[in-house]
Image (cartoon, rainbow, N blue to C red):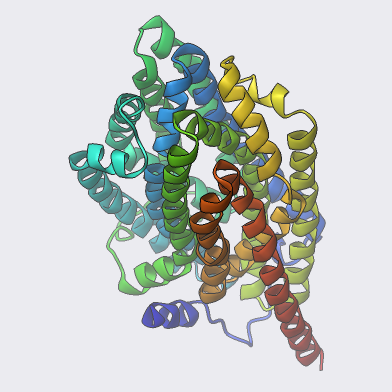
Amino acid sequence: MEKMRTFAADFIKIDMTDKKIPTALGTEKVSKLLAQYAIPSIIAMTASSLYNMVDSIFIGQGVGAMAISGIAITFPLMNVAGAFGSLVGVGASTLVSVKLGQKDYDTARHVLGNVVDLNIGLGLLLTVVALIFLDPILYFFGASENTIPYARDYMQIILLGNVITHLYFGMNALLRASGHPKDSMYATIATVVVNTILDPIFIFGLDMGIRGAAVATVIAQTLSLMWQIKLFSNKNELLHFSRGIFRLKKRIVTASLSIGMAPFLMNLAACLVVILINKALMRTGGDYAIGAYGLVNRLVFVAVMVCVGLNQGMQPIAGYNYGAKLYSRVTEVLKLTVFWATLVTTTAFLLGELVPEVLIRIFTSDEELIRISVKALRIVVLVFPVVGFQMVTTNFFQSIGMAPKAIFLSLTRQLLFLLPCILVLPEIYGENGVWYSMPISDLISTIVAGVMLWWQFRKFKHHDTELSI
């Protein structure tokens, strides 16, 4: 791990004498840049969250309450797939932003080629392993005899399209990093629209049930990936496919994986936590409690993905200006992103507390599932106003290549705080103990993030003072 960190640190060093900033990322007003980059990402991420909600709505209303619980069982496996995707995509996109800030365009192009190779390799490996051991994995994740048929039918299709999913998300991350946030947004929106059209056709029209939802998902991502490949095949673009860029380079692979280690570990930690949550809920509340967790996750996911969109808008701005040593601009974009993320999560808090039943009934008409879900949603969003700050702070350290700090913050909520709560509180308070574990860990991890961010601000001010002398 230490060797990988050293590679990443060496790889993003720049020449102190090179003060000329070649693009608007270093000269344009920061608030304008954030709007330019974040709005398309927010639209794309909101569409992505709606994309997940659409599946759940059609499955819940068309297949039933147990199907919703079956989908919830697949969350850990989806987190594992997301972990490997973010290991490559997030790390590479951050590296591209920094390299563009350094005007090292040749390396940026090689990062593109290496992303394709890594996504295909890791995607195939995960597909083969997961398909061979699918049933034992799902039972380990908390499946019961009632829910495993739904979880199995869904994941078999999703896993067959896993390489496509990895490439789709990887290409989208590089589109944003290379200055094409609108194209990234269009790709995501297209995926949502196609999936929304195909869901009822496959689920109801062709009577494929939950498998139909999975098929619609894979087809939608395939069509968007084909368009992304076309964009990167344009030789007039700075970042494009060309001969020689697909040969894996040790320095690029190591630096990308090092920077991407933070979201990778965060997703793996999330996988472990969801497994324990599912098991605790199965023990204290049964299949309906797991289904409620699935619905709450879908709703909370909307606010989280808006914050992710803000983070994605911040990432190229922070990465570029950090590479160019314009620390005051790095600080400014961070403060703006924190403000908007806090506004988003506060809105989610108000909706979750004031109209939870209205939100839950979108997915299901099962009264028992509604009752449990409403209670769970109100508890889970208790401290949501501070969650935006924690998310932005973690992404900020990742955006400027500070992998160790990002990794630490990624793990504080999941492992250091949430995991102990899940192991202890359900034994004392039953099902409610599972729900209360989440806001407690959110609050503590936010305090830790605040302390680390305050310390980093002091360093930036010191650097600005030195440069002005």
